[in-house]
Length: 327
Image (cartoon, rainbow, N blue to C red; front, top):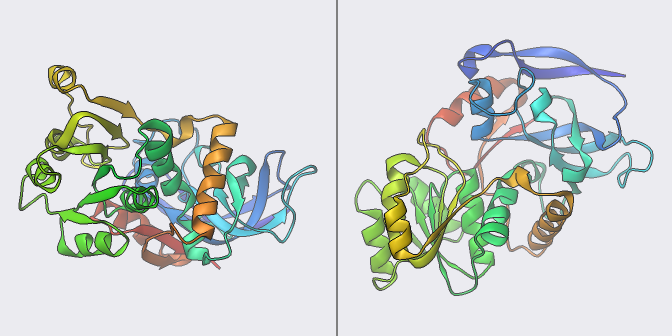
């Protein structure tokens, strides 16, 4: 049995008011899980939504950190992993067990050995965002070489993963981001073009970049009015992936417009795939990472004692992946 410090919510509400550092005891992992000593944990918008009581499927008071990287302390009999393995994986966060702790459990079927090219911080922010990007660009609305991909909210953790994976798949990537700093970041990680939605009409700018035709694929994790307006950039027979609603609500699809322009709209939920599909996705992503084609675009890195500030920062405009360094 191990006892260690972990961050957990006292109640639901404003995240910077409800998180406290507690002692937690960790026993031997049950089948399908690994007990790891945490080196770093990744944070994203879902962590904020959990603490505000707005994330579906939560069965316990949340502990932030849907993903973690560290060294295996104990594995159950028959596991593909062993003590000492350096791994990155997803935590059983729906049960209130997160990565912002000195020890945690990760789900074995959603865990991989860390690519040698990754630092702990890069590994901590890789699995979740790139799994969502893979679900969108490979499994739901496949983008192919030579096509144009428009990414709304391109500077966040999921957006930057979409930008990088889109480039790795051979697409021309157009990134939508509000500030110059965000747009510069997107350009550095591979975006071919950037659009400032506060200065120009996104759809008009995207059509201009494509010679009036429009984009082949549009990935939206912003929603609301910004997403609805950007939807007009989609070419006839194009494809739309809905990944989230950072602006507070989903974008609005006009059925008549959808029919008349013959485009399609698909929902993307990375947790909605079976074990075989997950395994194929994680293996393909790790292979791309090993070959230097994708890597975690890190944003802010916080110390373990600054977890409340790290989670609260997710309310504001972010650049790249937010990570907590534990060890």
